[in-house]
Image (cartoon, rainbow, N blue to C red; front, side, top):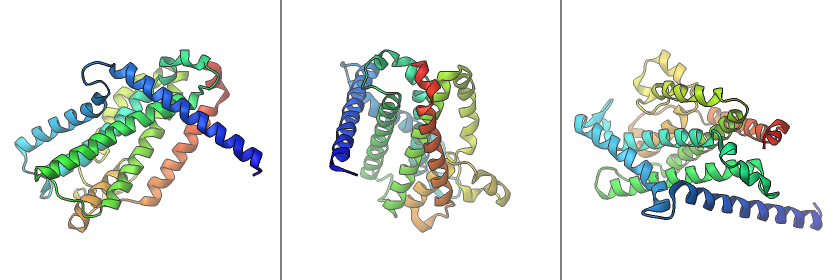
Length: 264
């Protein structure tokens, strides 16, 4: 790559970062406003939901499944659930909601999706870290046995969720059926997503089936990162990596589709 090409690439990259940054600020103001807590609702909404579930489960159960603590089980599970559900719903009809911005030459289809996914992933990630720190301070959680595995699991869940949101967002611009089908479909995915169980609790035949579900692997990784070898976990790094790469390729192809550009 020549110096001229490298300089042009840096300018283009810098421009895209500025555009995404501006879209992020606009999304925060549009979604949460400037009054009361404002953008802090981005952090508070996931926290309120997860804490509510923790209170309900802790009221009726002191342990979940086979003698593991309820609080870390809920924090790792429901935070993951919020991540892929929020990203998927925010991705749908993203272009329609921001169609007026497409009149600006610098704003591209991918910029709108990147901004939305970054905002939602950042919000849920911040709430996830906040909950871990607070629960540790209250003595309801301990320091993760393998922090790197926990972070890796969250990284893959974020990657998967962002790609899911972009794919659904692109498809929803072509047909309203995508939005209508996804609403009930995501509820059917809840029982098999790994939020309410650990793979080791299931029979061997059921384990083989749920291991095809992508969300199960990052959640198992996070729980393995928290409890370490004290709790048996099942995940395949190669499988979830392949799924995320294929979803990334699909998302990029959909955003580059000429029909998508014609819609805007």
